[in-house]
Length: 255
Image 1 (cartoon, rainbow, N blue to C red):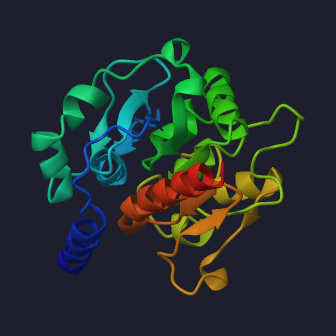
Image 2 (image 1 turned 120 degrees about the horizontal axis):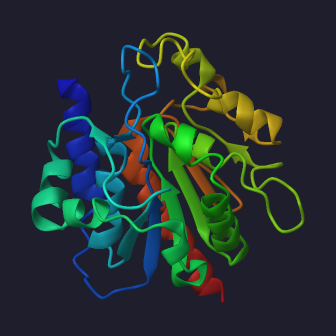
């Protein structure tokens, strides 16, 4: 764990070096309101702090305004302790005030956002993945030349996004996320048995070309395909955010 945290610190120090605070546009982060998975043992669902706070830091430190939205708005639950860059963004970048006053979907105008990101934690699989309002927002941002990003279980939350032509957004695109091969080894959701869906399965069912560990040179690689940016595990959440910014800038340059 210490090695992982050191690696995270090095990565975040490198990618958050931008000091330009000129606002370049807005990015939407979708979070879950769900705290437990409904089992007697109260297995925690919620949002993983290490998959939301570091991307937030990357976005704001590169000059983007960030708004949070959740299915019911207001406060949202987090797992993981606020250490490293998470502590920094909570103390100096107003993370807590922003995320704990999340918007409701009806207050979100998709035209205001250049990108949308969903981090991990199991929560989004329960209350985001089938929320029609949120799925519609994601589809509209994407069809408005926006970028969609996700880390860990986040990609499972946008697996069901349908575009205006009726196709699933992920159809025919390379995507990744927390893989079945790892899910079934973890007790966090009783080897996946508490989940409404295994995200790898759902991405495949809806036409996504799921990238497994065998498909990647490194399990922490970022997969980018047609403005969808994904990764399997939390150490790369901040890198997803930086690659999303790169995609935004690429589109702006080509306009």
